[in-house]
Picture 1 (tube, helix red, strand yellow):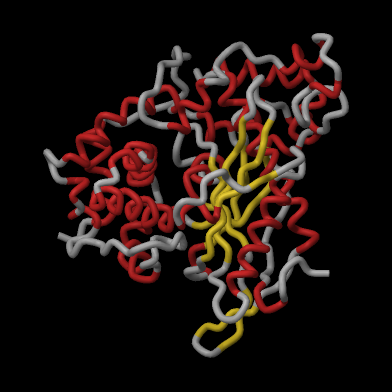
Picture 2 (cartoon, one colour):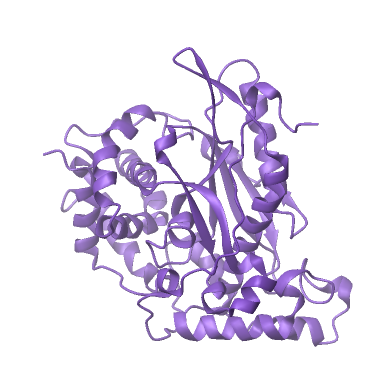
Length: 398
């Protein structure tokens, strides 16, 4: 029986392909290893710093720890690469030495990609259909699209930074029962993502509209509880923003063909994703909204968005984004599916935001936070001033 009512379900377009992920795509421009630095602004960075100590899966599996005491999914009895500690550690070391990232970050990326793989495999057999009204016609659409900063890294290969959040778009559900259908969709998607790890839960805080779409997925990293954050929002802006992309983990870049075939969670499976233009409009809106509202702590926490925008502006997807952003901003006035009050896009485009105004407090706060990215980016980190110019160029109607 369908997990959703027929009136609010959709085809889940997810295809598995056993293709080897491209090391050129995900590991180009590797720097020398860096020493982890303390991070002052970004909680998502600070959580990963807790995992920067020496972390060996083989130590957990062979160090005399009772199986019942092992973290979920780790060591004896575990499936996939996590069930082969020596092999896991070998790939972990190769990725760590090449990327210059702390071990905990690479391990979290492995669990993130594992969740996405299980999502692709669990979701496909349960593919469902939804009929949505569009100009009086009934059409089919995808129930769930992979989007956001993590998709830019693992699916598009545009950015070279660690990202731990899983962002998904569900179709724009309207009419009777839409709210209930979205709630069920979020629960089902979280269960699919958490298949290899055992549990998902609501976040502790539900203080505002932005947290209501979140689910926490517990993961076995280090000796402290840790989690990935999955967000599922309701929005759909057209089939021309969709593309199927191959997903790759950091460890998968260094795996052999045999390992990729044996451990498919390392990469080579496909998910339907939103094109970078949608992410550009979303991130420009998020930065502009926080700058206008004076939410400087939240602005600093999203400093990664500035880097993402700069890298998209350097990519082959920049012109498509520039063409689409004005229309996307008009179609998604509710802060891109997250609800809350709308902050209008400036008349000259997002380039007219106070964020890009020299000497503004918003810009100063973002500049203060920008260096915190250095230990989570491999390859080129543009200077702050250049990153600002690149980001503003994506929507400058002057």
